[in-house]
Length: 298
Image 1 (spheres, rainbow, N blue to C red):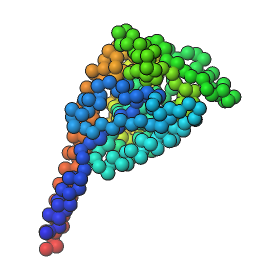
Image 2: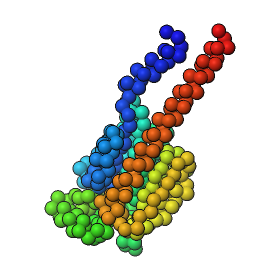
Image 3: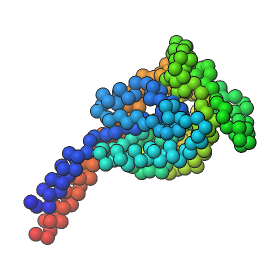
Image 4: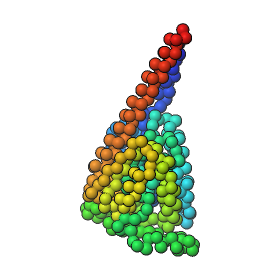
């Protein structure tokens, strides 16, 4: 077996062990996969493996009252998942919504293993038009040890579509969780989220994964400034932003949800395709170099 044939054999064995492509989905703070709308189903249609993460002290089902979460643990959980997935799949990407998009940025700043990230309504500051003026003052009681209060979700629940808003309000009242997340967010989770946002604002220049941002110009939770800062400071070779004009914060279930799903899926498909082409070109170049070198020495 000559050198080139042996390389091809080893590459074939390695490829056989690998799957194709995995996409991690990150919902918002104290939320669930319901927030991602039709994105999981659309990813499966393009043969991506969908990895829904439930993170301790972050996901709605795993929030334990009275325990103070650490945003670094949230990052570590996702980073560990990325490393394990890289052993099975050719590429790993992340699609995150709201604080899930912020968490995706934190992981991308700390890891070089990601092919791409899709940021849906990312949050660097709680500065949308529905955020009360006294929001920043909420940290004062926290500093003084009063930490058992809750921030309750209220109308418009991040949704512009009135019919969907009524259904969400009904689901929150009945089950405590809906497509917009939980009915209330504990102060301890909000405190950890503030620290996560601060870290991301400081480390945006470390992000190099190809990035798509989709943000509403009428986002009531995070103003367009959030998306603009990300686009300005990241160092991704491929970076794109799409502005929406007919929805609020939870863009995955609002009026323009089909646009959101289609754009996210197309971006991930293009990156996966480009990655495959790059691998083929590198392999071809490597094989040619081997053939040339062997030709000179034989």
